[in-house]
Length: 307
Image 1 (cartoon, rainbow, N blue to C red):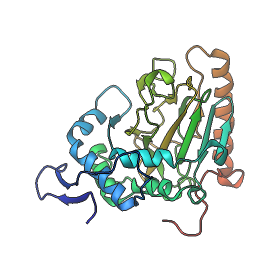
Image 2 (image 1 turned 45 degrees about the vertical axis):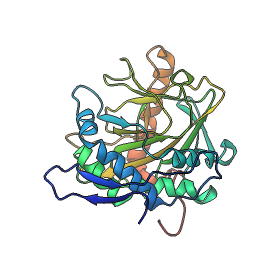
Image 3 (image 1 turned 30 degrees about the horizontal axis):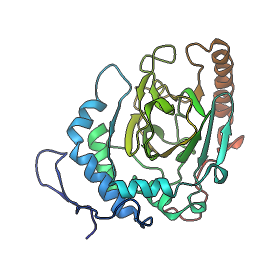
């Protein structure tokens, strides 16, 4: 029995789980322990289930991009272990342009095994079941290929301008409908930057800020109106994030839609906004016309067997 064995209670309340979680005695200064995805997933499912009603209410709040977050997702020794074993930016790929500047990786077998275990813990069936309850999305499907997902690191000067994510998966078969963002930099303060900004009324409105606090998980719906960004890092440190994206055969919006990841300038960036609008139009047109024959996003986990 692991440290987070789950017992689903046979009750009317879909969110009622009981957790047998023993107190973890290890102090954070001991050598980094080895945790497997089964144990990590048990803790994730337990935390989400414990806060299910509150998270459900927040996610479905009217007048804003569907979103919610939960703090202290994992026991601190596990969260600190993930942060400790996170790769340096030299072992990741820089995505640097007018649109964004950040370091990313989906090739998990190049990094410490714990990073892959943490990534795929979020795709465990127990976690997925609670996510479906919270979001009300019964067709939610994880992505073992980590298309555009995986991990990211953002040192000082990095940013993500307001954007909506690619509408589909790499095969253009399923709609992208959900982002899970798990922040793992200890002691990260709000004034360091690197915070998630949700533009509920569009990129010319005002962003709603969610602090990228250590051991916080954010759930965010994605559709053609879910404009979001990451504020520029102003601190000489690195904001680290574990990202999982989920797909569905059914879109969140009514009617079909298709677009590449589309960026906009911030409200004060008129010229940048004009250039990015043109860039969006060109890339979406080419993607719609040629699909993956012209360009395949290399940001996937390239392996012969999916975990």
